[in-house]
Length: 153
Image (cartoon, rainbow, N blue to C red; front, side, top):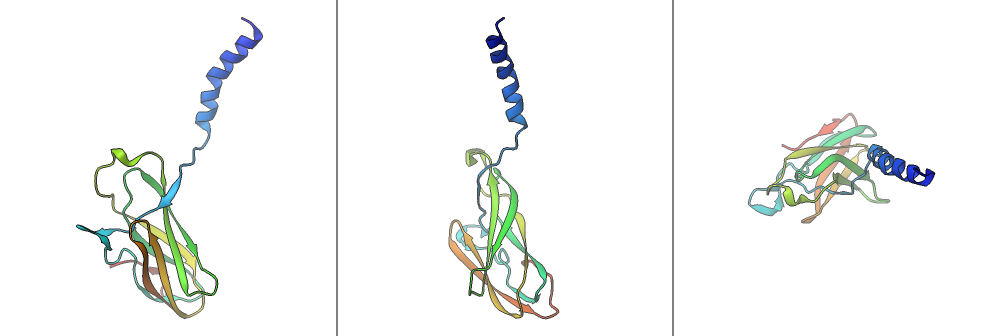
């Protein structure tokens, strides 16, 4: 066997092993908030909670109720404070590693925790852009000595 042929055989065996050991990153997309059954344009009460009495200048968590399909995994939450705004934008994200055609209709109910540092006392607004119905908002009140977590009811 020639050297070139040996090298070709070695690469054909080793390449899949090396590539298989690499981490594969799947594309991400925004997760939809949980909807009222039979009303696809109505967010389930508590899916984006209204939070009052949250602790000022502290790390707080807000639990979102999302509706990921069976092909979605690794939920995360990105938080953004737009400049000169009282909005707190929450972007619940999931990885989508394969087509959703094999998923049953409906969703697997789940939650995504958003953790962030609050600003000083005041009235703010939580904002989530739902991929199906657009912007969803709820009030978010921050006070001195408040709570550190908020979940829907």
